[in-house]
Amino acid sequence: MKKHSKLYLILVLIVFLSLAAFAPQTALGEAETERPAKIDAALWDVMCAADEDEWIPLYIKLDGIDENELFEKVKQKTGMDPAVFLDEALFEKEVTSKIRKAIEETAGMESEQMAGNDERLTDASLASLEAELSGDLKRYIGEPGQIVGEIEEKRPDCIEDFLIDAVIDRFRDEKRMIQQRENTDVNQNFVKRCVEPRQNIIKDIGSCFSYLFVDAKKADILYYAQQEEVALICYDDPDYQFAPA
Image (tube, rainbow, N blue to C red; front, side, top):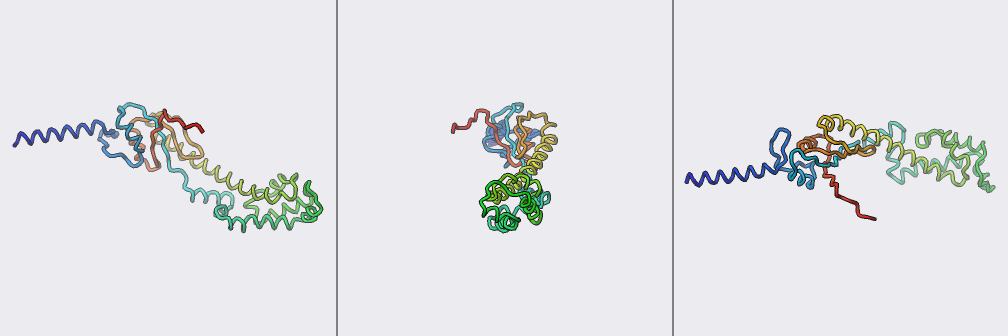
């Protein structure tokens, strides 16, 4: 009976050691038998088959600036309400209708259009339009003098569409610049705090979006998966190719 018990214990020990041999090791040498949630399944398979000192190419997705935080920063910087750009009816009320009214109240606009003047507005009409755009619309238009300078050579019947497009472009550009700045800071801070001290190979650092392409070893990958700002770690398959269009 004791002999059978010893054989059973030996078999259990062999199975345990076999599993531990193929499981990635943490920095403390403890076997990781379950895949951390932030590590992609394909990457986990690669890690299980890799040597401890083997470089593994990674795509690391970081948590960048939250959309609500991004919109709040746009509002603080420009005065534009992001909600206006997410609701067609609200955009019509706060932007389109006010641009249309500003054009209708511009001195000389109606007479010039009725007269068939398709060349440009007079200087007097441009000055009147600039004054109309200097009110509530200024936070969406930006600097009225600058935008009026851009429409000097435009036909009167094209001005409404031009101003609407200019507002949309301004919001999009401000949002992109803030997103790029904030996400670049996230990426650079992660590199300085986590990647450089571990002497991993940095192949690419995102700018507008929060991501990194890095070559790292198993222990480093497990360390990255424990960091709060990491959203997902995937295997960057060097043999993967996009299918031709």
